[in-house]
Length: 220
Image (cartoon, rainbow, N blue to C red; front, side, top):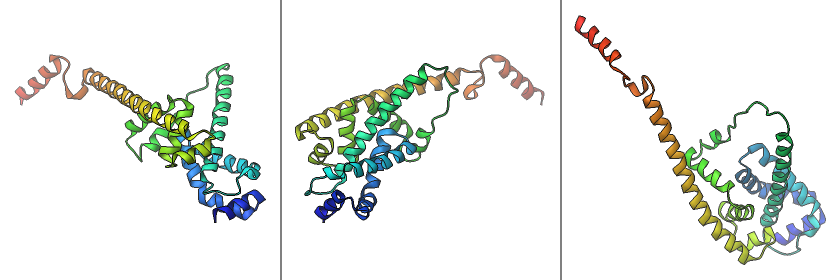
């Protein structure tokens, strides 16, 4: 079955491409969304991935298993190119007067699904991983591909994939715990500051409000 799909892809059969889109576009979209944190960007990456797959169709091996690793490998390259383009765009914008700040609602949307604080910490930690380690982590952990499939997707030896995954897990755990500790410390500091404000937490900041209340109670 998989070999006939591969043959159809290599031949440029439109129906076969429609089939692999139906079968694997969801996995590509999930991978793109997790790597970018942006719904619109993820949708663009899906489109670009399948356009690139069409361009590279003759490179598909005649025999093998699912084409999902191949597509995720293409998606990973598209994401890399997108990040590079975004960096060039940011560098260009940095030379211009700063625009008005626009709120980012990505964390709010994601917070409906998981704990917002933990997600923010994990996302910040993930962004601090080496790009190569981040890609391996996303494909192995989030997409559930085995080492061999990820090696195929990224064009790297299996041993390299294993070492990068191990390093990514350890580093991500350390960074996430650090981000969470920082976030909680800042939250506690904000709460303490609010309690110290006049009227904060229902506390009186001096004796005047208490005296006024006592006078009213006495006169009743």
